[in-house]
Image (cartoon, rainbow, N blue to C red; front, side):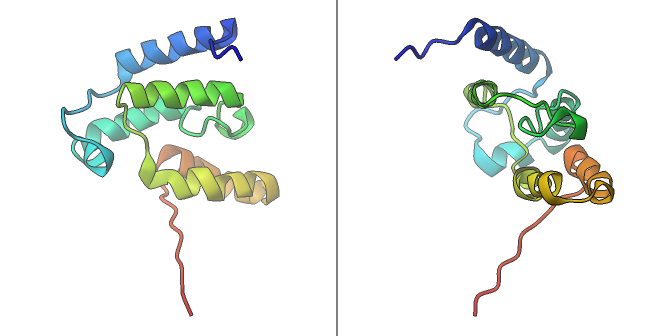
Length: 134
């Protein structure tokens, strides 16, 4: 099994590394997880908007809905480079971007897509999930 990047993946990896190096706020030493997100909230919010402008805030979403239509390997490369560089991820948006948004894209009406997807991508709308146990 050859685990080296293909030419296309290597090119994409270079693009991601350069973007992170140029645009991402620097991680604070010894800070991880939720602390990394909240320790520099304003800078991270600006960073998330930069990710969204490239479609990388929702990399699997189709371009027509604000995503990047990345392949599975491109998503892996993006996530790997974000992790290696300790670049903050918008974990507070995971329900909207990772669950509700994809469901609306597949099953929602055009009206629902226009109403809900832009706010998810911009971070203006934070979706939550509630549970109730009997």
